[in-house]
Length: 265
Image (tube, rainbow, N blue to C red; front, side):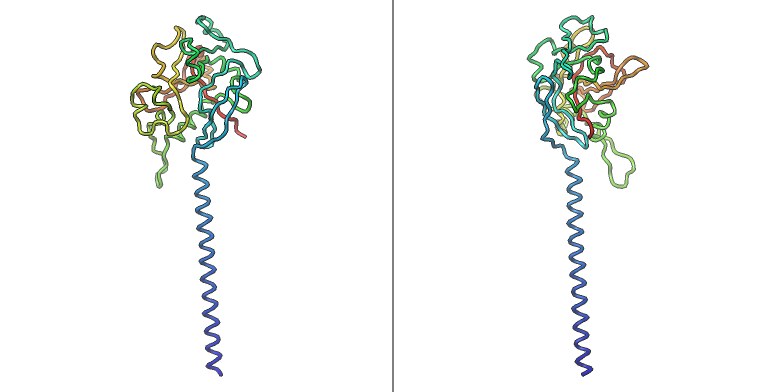
């Protein structure tokens, strides 16, 4: 009788141990699934993807791109009215007017055919009105451009407290290889990978349009000014360099392209 009771007890212990292993296995599987799902979600937030489009006051529709947590227009601004409905003066050939404090816009080389591709060029006084962007958007600040640059060029490696800076941010930002002159920017293997689609729209200054810079140079205003020198900050891409360059002292009468960024919720 005692022997029989011992056998029954042994079987009961074996069954309990078996159930415990199954529970642990099940728990482990659930944790693994949760970890994989969480990792996948983190990666998804880092990818560039946006089905959002934005329309300006004139009905022009712009594609957008999400890079990190920022949502940018993926096209240059091409509006000729402020968002309150007032017209922006066209500079035409009245270059002396550019030295004032009024906002102006122009098509490169006064050729409206350039606008569909490159958008318009604006002086900084048009930017400073705060009325160029569609509702819910704004002309990007210098800090927002710097954040974009960091996202594209700072690589964090495990065990290294400081980022490795990859000097190809300009190539990543640029797009439309057929529009850029042949050079390091276009020939970099990372060209066009961000979806930002920066274009070589040239510029205008006090003497008119910058020579043959259409195709060689893309310059973009920020909304950030330098009060000490009555300048403003801008950023630029050259066809012969793969990097993003920042100009802390751009003269406000110059005309550059504009990229807008979505307001944070």
